[in-house]
Image 1 (spheres, rainbow, N blue to C red):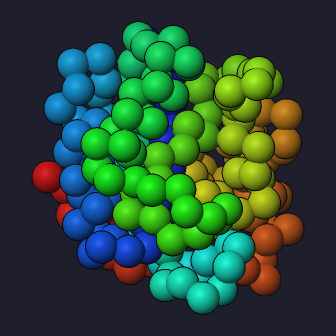
Image 2: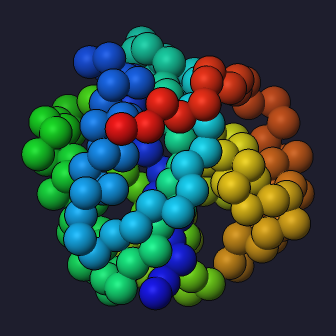
Amino acid sequence: MNRVMVGLGANISDPLEQLTTAHCNLAQHSDLAITATSSVYVSPPNGPQDQPDFFNAVVTLATSLAPDALLGLLLATEDAMGRQRKRKWGERCIDLDLLIYDDLNIQTESLVIPHPRAHERRFVLDPLIELLGAQFELPGKGALGQLQAQCADQKIRVLCEFPGC
């Protein structure tokens, strides 16, 4: 089984409920096993500022799915939940990002692992540190704690423990 980290984010249509629904959808999939879930974090949007704050969390999955197949599953889950891509980095009811897949570095036209901006975003780094620890090495980028220090000016707060299904 492969260890995978997936980011969950939402900022419209009851974001906490959207994260919970996405989590439950992933938990019910026969090729996935959720082994850990971070707290829920709230942060201002990256990108257009005329939108609500984002709610974010990270889940650790065990899966036998290949990276491309897992990405397809995540995109299909977003579509099933009504995700609409109206503008870059705009508001969304759900966003599922494949952050880490084992220790792989992958760069294809459709998939980049680790996520290409994970190392620049506290809303990704803080929940990853919660689950993996500050010393964990983000493949090709460095230790999570060091990366987090470089983003110290980004506002973020813990909202709550993840509510679960």
